[in-house]
Image (cartoon, rainbow, N blue to C red; front, top):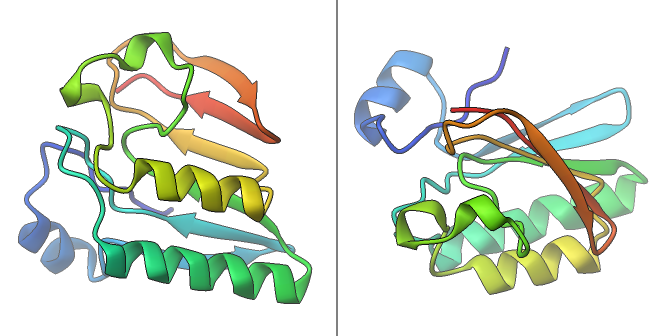
Length: 132
């Protein structure tokens, strides 16, 4: 199993308990899974984390791997349930979406919204949003 930190987890305790960084990647059967620390509350993502995401996408492209990302709050542009600052990534969302488009991210897995599962498709990426 692999964990994605949510907006109710304390970063330092998450790292201590799960023995891993807040963002990480792994490859399974030709798919690079990129786990991104994006908790919502309009906090955003740092430039250094987005640089890391881009480097992971480049590795996937070089290796001929599909890309799946997982993060707590969805970057889905037309996500009707994601209105309001607590339901958006904030700073870095535009750059992340540009990278997703450039590297043709296959699937985005997220949660947070405390509603039934829903899905969509936008700019080559499938979105699966699981209830929080």
